[in-house]
Length: 80
Image (cartoon, rainbow, N blue to C red; front, side, top):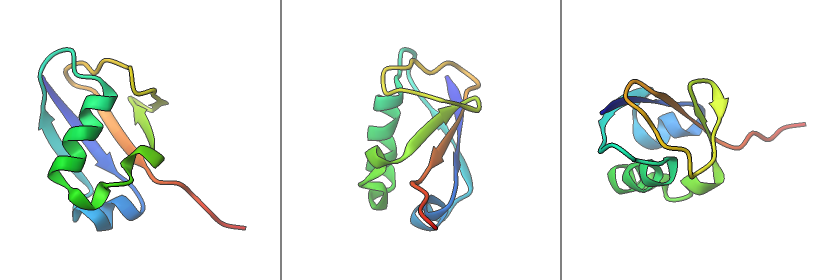
């Protein structure tokens, strides 16, 4: 299956990309995707601290991804 991954904030600097496509096996979860992202982009080593949204809704690690999903990687936001 094919999904699109969107990077926001600092993750664009860490990956050098705004987005990328991933070919995944069926039954891949958000957790599995995180592992693949860390393997491909080693600078995302703290990815588990980031929020993940699938099709514009926040997702948990156990969510199964499906063909055509759009996954957003959202870093923590700070400010005052």
